[in-house]
Image (cartoon, rainbow, N blue to C red; front, side, top):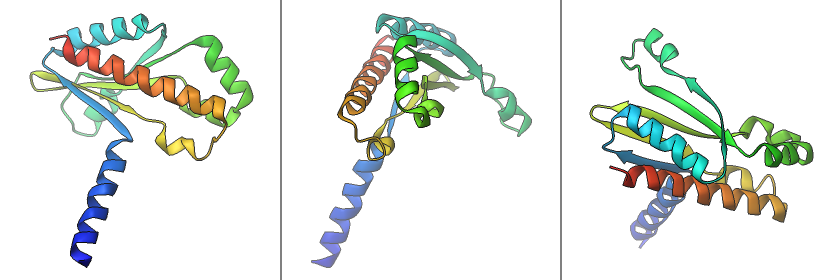
Length: 147
C-alpha cells in the first residue's frame, strides 16, 4: 500500500512540475521558426521588445550553437500598469520565450506563472497570469503547427 501511495505522489508531483514549463518542438528550421514566432506574438496583440542572443555565452563555455535566442514581448500599457502596482514583478516582465535549434528542428520554451501565483494572490493579477499563460500556450502551439 505504501509503495502505491509513493508512486501516486511521485507521478502527481511530476505533473505539477511539468505545468511550470511550456515546450514545443517544430520541424521548422530556426530562421523560419523565429519568423513564425514573431508573427504569432504580433497576432496576439503583443509588441516585440527585443531579441537577445544567448549563444555568445554558450559558445564561450564550449557549446556549439549559433541559434539560441530569447524573445521578449509584451503590451506596453499593461507592463507599465502592472509595474506600478507590483514593482516586484518587474524582473518577470516583459514576457519571454526561448528558442533554439536542435539538429533539424527548433525548440521553444516558456515558463508559466505557477511559481508566482502564491506570492501575488490579487484576483486581477491572477487574471493577468491566466491570460499570459493562455496566450503563450496558443503562440507556441501555432508555431508548432506551422510546419
